[in-house]
Structure formats: C-alpha cells, structure tokens
Length: 343
Image (cartoon, rainbow, N blue to C red):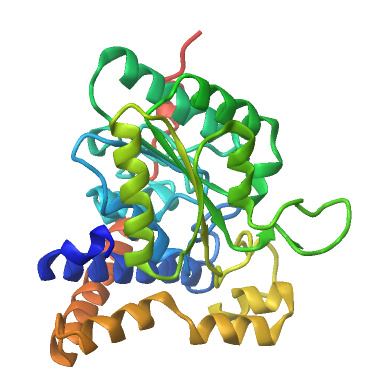
C-alpha cells in the first residue's frame, strides 16, 4: 500500500477543500473576463483540472520545503497558505496584491509561504528550482524543492541541462511535469515538427540515470504516493525524480478577452472552444478529479453528502469575498512605479 493509506481523515478533508478552492478560484478568474471586462489585463493561465496534481503533490511537503511553479501558478499559493484575497488582488493588479500589483497573474511570489517565485518563461523555472535546491544542499537546510512545469517545457534546453546537473549533484528537487497533452495549441500526439518525442515523457529521466514515473494526475492519492517517495528520496540525499502527472485542463492555454464582442458565458473559454475535440472534453469532464475524489471520500466514509456540501458552500462564500475584496482594492499609485527597481 502507498503512503496515502496512512493519511488521516482530517488530511483527506483538507485535500478535498484545497481542490475545491483551486477550482472555484480559477472559475472566478475566468468569469472576471466576462463579468468585469478590462479588470484583468492580458492573459491569465488557469489550472482547472490540475487540482489533484497540485494538492496531491503539495500534501507531501515538509513545512520549510520550497515550491516553484511556472506561470500557471494560481493554485499553489492557495494551498501553501497565501491569502486568496491577495492572490486575486494581484491578478487584478491591485495594491493589496501579494506582489503589490506589479507581478500579475504569471509572476506570483510569496517567500513567506515558501513560494520564492514563479517564472513567466517556459522552462526557465526548472533551472531556478535547481538553484534553490543547490542552495539548500550547500546550507544543509534539509529542504526539498518542488518544481512544476508543463509538458511543453520538456522541449526546452533548460529542462535537459537542469536535469543533468541536478542528477550529477544529487540535488534535493522533485520535478513535476504536468502533462495536459497540449503545448499551447498543439496536441502532443500530432506527428509533426511541433510534437514532443517520447511517450511517456517520464522516460526522459533515463538519460540522466534518475527515476522517472508517470502517474494519473486526476487522482490526488496516487499523486501523493509517487511524489511522497520522490520527496523522501531527495531528502535522503539520493537526488531528483522526474514525475509526469497526466490530466486534462478544462481551460485553454490562456484566457483573455481584449476586443469586443464579449461573450455572455464564461464557459465559452473552456478548452473545447479552442481545441474543438468534444469527445475528448466530455471524457475529461466525466473524469473530473474533484467529482472523483468527492465520490471516493463519501464511499469510504471520510465525508457524507452534508459534510461535502458544507465544504463546497464554505469555498463558494470565501471566493465571493475574495472577488469583492480584489475589486474594491486600490490600484498602485503612479509614483510607486519605481519602487523595487534597482540600477
């Protein structure tokens, strides 16, 4: 049996709550483009569908372990304890945001909650995570660094260079490759010059003589088991692991409405409207990680229907307050523009 078999009922309820929080938060971001056009400038890269992968991974952390995601970074700080109000305010570019409105959706950072930075450049956060892991190794802090990135990043030179160095130096880092099978707008299985060679992608680990594991990223307990083993391996000084977590993202690569007409339904910004594969989208909906985990917790007696609904109502109320706070927050003052800029 895996490590998840020892999880307490309270921990399992916490995991379900965090998954619901991520989903509802991302839905509110998506709806903002329609309900409050112009509030979010440019793109927001959502992670709806990745909840089990995010929560299953982060549930294995020790208190001081670091987390370094890519630009699709909204869910991680929510789980780590960053104020959801501050995260939404940052996406709305408000002064009350976690980066005081200067980071926006792609550059969230909250060192106080062990998220040093997120990278807006594809694949570059992998190298940043290895740097943090090297610092932890040198300082003997006992920290493990969790590096999250998309399947498209495995085409980048930074991916190969960093995994090679991390393997040689046995750095305490867990690389979580989040494979939703789309690199922006190109499906991974298209046999053309834009496709990624190799299936599963976890086999790329063989080139560096480190473990590579593919896991069902729609099941938080399976993710927990795999990432827990990888984290303990890193903590013991045995080096990195490449974990490929496979799931379907319900939103497209990026959400943005910059020109009229503005759609009246935010659902029009789901993946089906961009990728056009109705059967694929419906299969993913049928395999929704939140619905699956909810059913599992009820069938095993961890939750009953009333308790599950109480969690969902709590999350809905929380996110109502989050959006209200962010909308009412002030914009940064023009004179703040030169703050934190150094020559």
